Length: 163
Image 1 (cartoon, one colour):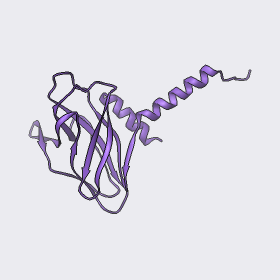
Image 2: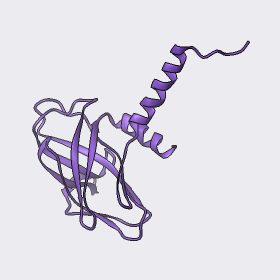
Image 3: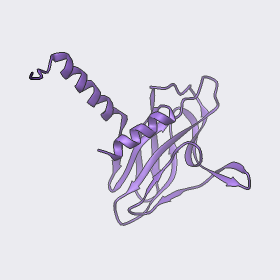
Image 4: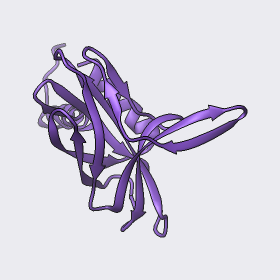
């Protein structure tokens, strides 16, 4: 028995492939790549939120993230979560340097993240918003941040690395 693709089968396969491609996104500025920008959902009335990106450099010189802006909040700060004794503490940092050939992957639960302060709107799963990342040596890069759960973001990052 031979398989005959039906119109419905082709549409389902196309939708599946499109959904996978939509999950993974990458933005580029010269030899700098920013992959899978995402923010966790934040309910109405929340004052702050957090966004995460993966930054990699393919060239010969490091990239230094020195700031970010977004219309969803009053300001965006670079933060780091570190263990001090038996307590997790968050602190603001002025910059993050990514060395050539390295990738810095921000994820919930610790380490670097972009703190969205003074949220002007809720961050609802499935929505997206613009953010501009500022790099000392390279200038600005506009990205689109998807609001999704940590599990969805991990899945998108896995999808990106397997392409």
